[in-house]
Amino acid sequence: MNVMETVQKRYSVRSYDDQRPVGDEIRSRIQQLFTEHDTGPFGTAVRFKLLDLDAVDPGESKSLGTYGMIRGARLYILGAVKDVKGSQIDLGYCLEKIILEATAMGLGTCWLGGTFRRSSFARQMELAEDELLPAITPVGYPAESAAIQDRIVRAGARSTRRKPWSQLFFSVDEKTPLTEDAAGAYRNALEAVRLAPSAKNRQPWRIVRDREGSYRLYLKEDQFYNRILGKIKMQHLDMGIAMSHFELAAREQGINGRWDPSAPAVNIPGLEHIALWRD
Image (cartoon, rainbow, N blue to C red; front, side, top):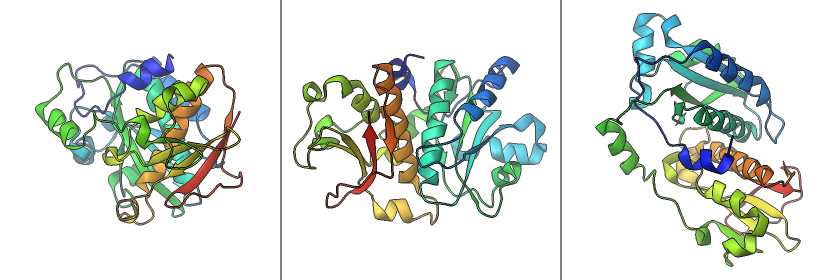
């Protein structure tokens, strides 16, 4: 896929064409993606399931099909991880790669994060006691015209607005903005991060090019928002999404690097060091 084109095309779809089912060939490709993207930078194994609501009890199917104000979706991707350090970052990283592949195939998706342990989704996932189900997404063909409800939700979430470079990307510290010209070969990688989806569009990522010219990813955490759901850390999912966008766009430019969460941190007040990009 063309990464930058796909990143720009992706948006949260809540209304799906229930008269246009996803064919067997594309379903098989989605399930193949589950095995291609099953481990994140922190090394956590991510378990996915493609849930077909047509195979679920009709009573349960009705409640599942309308979760998060979703309309018309018959397929959902469920993602589970062990409750260990970095696992939700890994889930965000892996699931966003799958979502971008689905977007390139003409499918719509919508990140839905929250506490699903006691939900029908958890039962369908056969969630183990030591697992978390932090996020799911419907997947299907978007309805031809977005429902009024979609437009209201997108406006309320400020989904079409993004922070400027000067608030996200820095040189050496969090005070000196990194310009697009100064980013050079990494311009697309950083722009792909800027355009990435995040919970409530908070964009909690910060990327700093350190004195050695390496790129470091930090979390500017909203502690109330990120901890209100207990073990589920929405902004950790956001970090994984940012990592996937940066990596995919960098590789499209011929930069063969990787994220290293174990690298010694360069501490910046108010920010949590997540990982170093090694090229």
